Image (cartoon, rainbow, N blue to C red):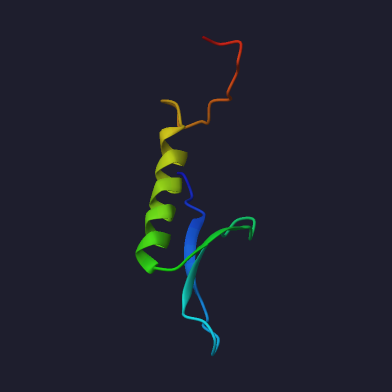
Length: 70
């Protein structure tokens, strides 16, 4: 089963700024981007997780990009 590791979290607002939303990889802890709206963050998460699933072959394995194929 594919584990979806791309998710979002709320970045606490400071007195000088509004609340923002961070998209990150929970497996590596890497920040992917920061968004002004929750909807934008959710859309990015959905897009990234969908592209990860679409990259699987029929055996649910990632196919390596090989420029020699084609």
